[in-house]
Image (cartoon, rainbow, N blue to C red):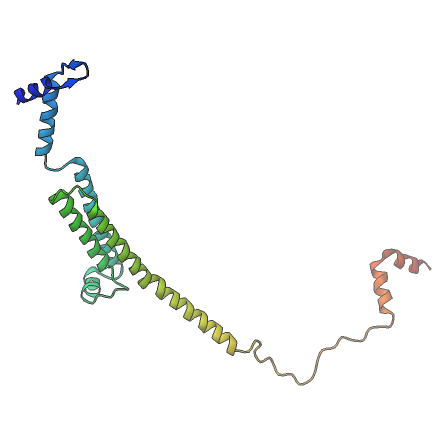
Length: 202
């Protein structure tokens, strides 16, 4: 190994001629590269695999919490898994997380791929599935409910009379008592204090 390092150091030429390179530093670099090849998985890959594992565990935890809140895990597992309904079940989101986990761990931890296609495929499949699920299970049914509620309100107001039947009257109406002639002048006197004082003095 040392002879290979020294021969590569001696064979380097530059524009000025032979360059003296420390053979020990070159040997250390070569040994570090060889040690890197022996290493099982890099730190970046390990972090990515941990992130993918955390994603699966987090989705699983959320699904278990959701099952527990709806009335018991065993009963809800029966409803969501055995009697699967696309609009109400979150089992498919759990399966999507398992798909992401299996694909990415297989691609980057087991096969040690150096290409981005596995991430692109799992991201595209996840996004497409979640967009379709949200539209079909939340947006469209909610819009239908709102439209039905609006139409029932509009239909009820068009059929109902604006005023309900009032109390029956026998023709008697309230009318104020007759007012005294020239009562308008008296009103003006009450509002104008000077006129009232002048009339009292005279």
